[in-house]
Amino acid sequence: MTSRVLLVSPAMSASLRQARFDDGGSIDESGAVRARSAAGALPSAARALTSPGVRCRETAAALGLDALPVAELAGLDVGRWRGRTLEEVGAAEPEAVGRWLTDPASAPHGGESVRDLCARVAGWLADAQKLEGRTVAVAEPEVVRAAVVDALGLPDAVFWRLDVPPLTVTALGGRAGRWNLRLGCPLAPSEAD
Picture (cartoon, rainbow, N blue to C red):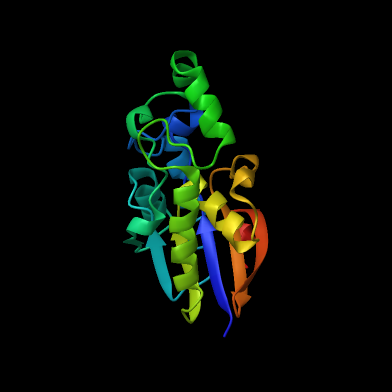
């Protein structure tokens, strides 16, 4: 049995534009317009899922997906840094940010470590691989990164070296515990394969 998982990153939001840790804000109007214009571009799927975060749920709705929120697809819990910009946190806690960016097991913000996020997403991906048919999931960029780290068996230190632009599709296809990866496909009406 071949499993297919399409991970769609959310549309642009003020938090993404400002390099702000997700504050639960909505996608912005330009992001909503882009997502609505891409509605119908995704292939049919046996199931549509979304991160429980606002911007992912709004992106899924704009894409015309009746997506079920799944806790395992939640973004990285950054604890007390939530809603602050990386620049603000870096100025106030430079050593903590340095540790966080270089040590995947570190969680100086009091939330979840990158290693814990990668483990959570790996568990979800293992379950998804057992399902027949295609899964489309609108998920935070860090969830997409964690899925790529797991799918390719990469060390979790690689996590920060992966960029996930808004409204792109990362496709995983595989069987028997092995994934193949197709990265960064723009989500646009002409890109629906």
